[in-house]
Image (cartoon, rainbow, N blue to C red; front, side):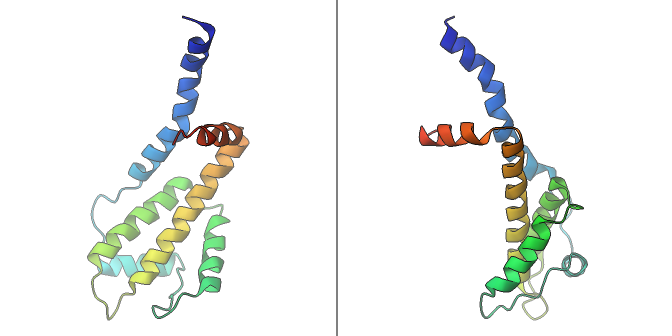
Length: 142
């Protein structure tokens, strides 16, 4: 085995960590039982998700909520993922257009997803993986 192949064999586990995180995190927050529409509405209220206007996109309102979620240190990455998974189920189970606004679920999911991505990026930065990420991306490794 030459020096280059030895180096590649040593690097492979390090390269798999970010990929593993991307694959494992979405499965950790899976909702075992679909929440009822009542539970969905109660949770978005408890999580202080704003009532987004379904008629138009209010960027300021969304950014305010997303910023609050991103900076909420009490929410773990697993909690963010669990909320995102629950909201995905809520979009399927809460079909009453008179009492439920799907935009509330959709925009909350976007905010929680952004918070997860921000945490992953911070992790990569803390562990000096950003330069490796950029270098591999430049090489077309996606």
